[in-house]
Image (cartoon, rainbow, N blue to C red; front, side, top):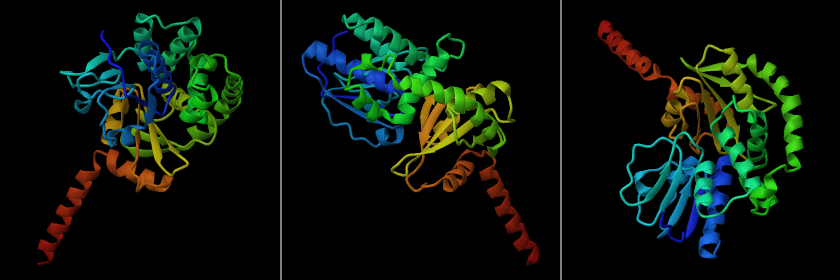
Length: 311
């Protein structure tokens, strides 16, 4: 594959896979072109609003879409897409994480190490959510580092050096949090699941790894819902929703919210007008309940018949 020097590297801001794949491509660009391009990260909704004016860019862990199909652009991703590239170079495999795809490209160009082997494996297990892998629990600790401390904070902490993330001291904090908080959080949350739609439930969380708590609920079938979602409010007021399932329906729900992800692990950013949890729940009910519009239509018909009867 012939690669063109990128003006910028774009990646997904919200998780470990975006961090690892973005830095890997940044390292590869520096190795090939002796210059380190800027790394920019976005959540899905902000990414869709981002003007793409660069002549050349490398994009990873962000779904391939028609606006990315540009000459000299490289896209390394694993999210489902119906777009067939005509101009851009696309490295795509839904069965591999973006970090694994980016690392395979790095390896093909002589960039690899034992620590990177380990980190990419853990990132792959966490992002694809592979509970049968022996390293699954440890991989969730690594993923939780980015979830709790934030993409840019972790990037600054390791000073852009991915190998410093391997066996980082903060993983001890993640291990203790998981061991102590998750059982408490599971029991508390299990009793506080609210209906959003016929097949969608909202899991309220106060402590513990929300994804692991929801994962346990789905495995144990402790709720009547095939899709479970959690909410997170960022410091700037933006509301994020995370969806999980075992039936492939999580992505369908995320797409209704203009988000994306994988069939059983997806997410979305809610509109800026949604500023608190109460507003978020109302918005989710209106958007995800498939019977809502039918009920409104029936109500209008009932009102119309009522007027006719009175006349």
